[in-house]
Length: 342
Image (tube, rainbow, N blue to C red; front, side, top):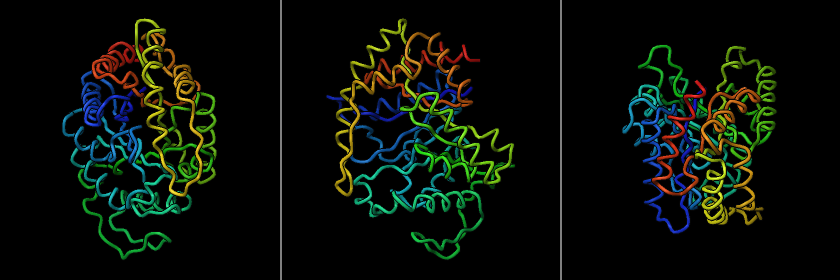
C-alpha cells in the first residue's frame, strides 16, 4: 500500500495566501521526513479554496527540496493550458527528478478560468479528450503533429524526450481525475489510472474501479496493464489519540474554509451551481475517511483498499488549518498509521 498526502494550500479564514502556501510546502517536506510515499498537489485559480495556481510549479520546488518522495499533480487543469506546454513541463520534471513525478490531469469546472485563459466553454464541455490524447502522445512519442478541432500544427520533435535517459522508461505517469462514467470510460480506454475524489465512499469507488476494468477490457487494454492500473483514492486524514478529538479538529476549521472557498467559484456562463453545506460535508468526510486514532485510521485505509482494490492514497492532512497541527498530523500518519499497514 502506498500512502501519500494531498495538498490544497487551502486558505482558512483569517489567513494570508502566503501563510497557506508556506503550510503547503512544509507539510510536503514533513511528508518525506515521516516516510510517506507521495505528495499530490492540487491546482485552483482565483479562489481561496486552494491558493496554488500551478501544481507543476509547486511540484518542481518540492522535487528540488526532497530526495525520495514521489510528487504528483492532483490535478493540473488541462483545459486551462496547452497540452504540449504541460507535456514539456512534465517531461522536464520527470527527467530531472529521476522519475519521481506523476502528472494528474482533470477537466476542471465551468469556471471563469475558461474566460481568463481564453480556452472557452468548449474546452471544458467537448475538447478534453482531444487535449488528453495530445498530451499523452507528447509524453510517449518522439515527434508529434496535430489535426484536431482545437489544436492543429505541423510535426515537431519532442524535446526533451521523457523516455530517453532512463532504461525501459515509458515517461511520466498520467492519472485522470474521474467523477462520472464518461470520465471513467475516457481513462479506461487509454489505460490510464484514475484519481477518485474524496467525496466518494468505498462503494462508489469500487463501482468506478469495476466500470474502469470493464471499459478497459472492451477497449483491448492488455490484462497486465489492467491489473497494475494503480488508481489513486483521495481522502481526508486526521490522527489523534481519540476519534472525538480528530473530528473536533476538522469540524472546527474545515466548514469555514469550505464556505469561503466554494462560494468564491464563479461560472463562466452565469449558470447556478449548488454548493454543499460546509458542516454536513465535513461530517461526511469524517465518516468516509481515516479520522481518529492511529489504529482506526489504519483499519479504515485497509478496509477501503480491500473493498475497492485501490492501493494508493492521497490524504488531505491540512484540515485543521494550523501549521503546527498539520506537521504533527503528517508525522503521526507516517510514523503511527502507515507502519501498521506494512
